[in-house]
Length: 319
Image 1: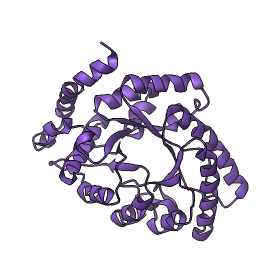
Image 2: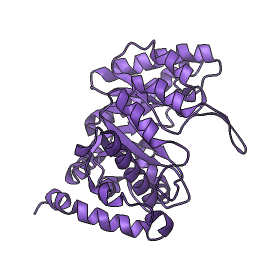
Image 3: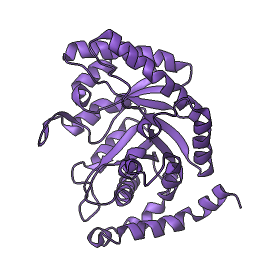
Image 4: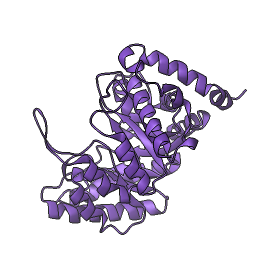
């Protein structure tokens, strides 16, 4: 029996065992999750598909407890369908065709779809200095090429580096236009996440995307990244997440279900997933919704399971 066939036949039973084991350490949540048994329903029963953002496992990856090449198998163990990579975990491999081929092989073997690559550390796309911006755009070219090789539909970039709001809008439009023009031939979308600074301001992002003309350019709305300014104690200026999601979703080509903490019923306590997922459905979005657990009160695996089950519960209610 081929590995993929075996995985597909045993995924549901294995997932049930994985879920039960993961929740053993958190009995109060487990005892109040009557919908857990329903989590085995696939995305065919929902209006969206479920992917796993690699950042959900960043602690294990940075600690070398897990390797980037193991990501596809890990995603399959949670019964997800898509892979959302983070370039930090294979940052020197963008041009390594042998390595990228192995990533493709791993994804195919596990029945997973390579969805996108989240790009960090390649320069500031909203920088006031044009020379700096052009360098940042060039730095992203190799990731467009890598995403194309992997069969992804997009890369996620950051609009960072701006100081003046108005000037940053102009700089961002120019950067996104240039990079989208480059990516057009590879059928790669250039997506911007609300990821701090001006990009977490829904009004500012609307100014940018209402003026970008490239069809392969859009947003990746994140449920929770609406902190505009931080200080030593946390977020000092936060944009209303529901208003922000409402503003970003019309331009969305991917969606990130950010989660941190859950109550005993399995609901995320910072974001109303039902409310946000209704917004997602209302704009006609039917693509991948990525699980991105970023909390610390339960393990990464538990957080992924909780987020997945909440997405499925919300999806079933809306489908």
